[in-house]
Image 1 (spheres, rainbow, N blue to C red):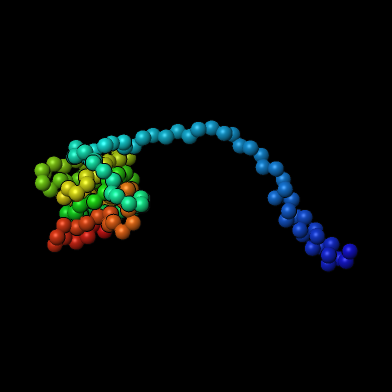
Image 2: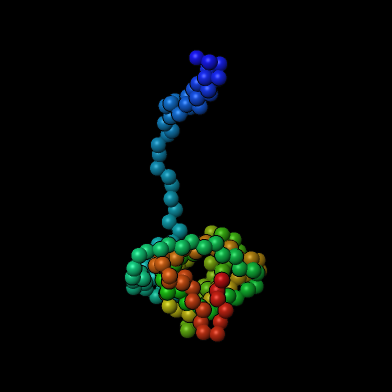
Length: 150
């Protein structure tokens, strides 16, 4: 075997040894999970009746709302849930005037096809929102004459 072949063979062995070494098992244990929100109705008490028909598509958004900002009036055509990472969010229902405020660390369920908006407090609000929709279905629809929510 030539010196070049010996070097190539040695390099191959050095590369393969980690791949051939058995993986040591780590401790197997269950994780801890906190249910942040579990509901069959939205924050304002309206029951969810169905998911959109078709192939499911989940969407997860991280939304940042500047301080002292009211989002445009809008509706969601699908069930969704949110979690306040920082700041606070007050959700307002346009038809009833009902309001509810959610602080950092709280989760909420949003209404389907009810006109509402979110309003931030004295600091920017950062949210995680997950939508259970279908391909092509918008997660948010502005009321006629309003700007998009995002």
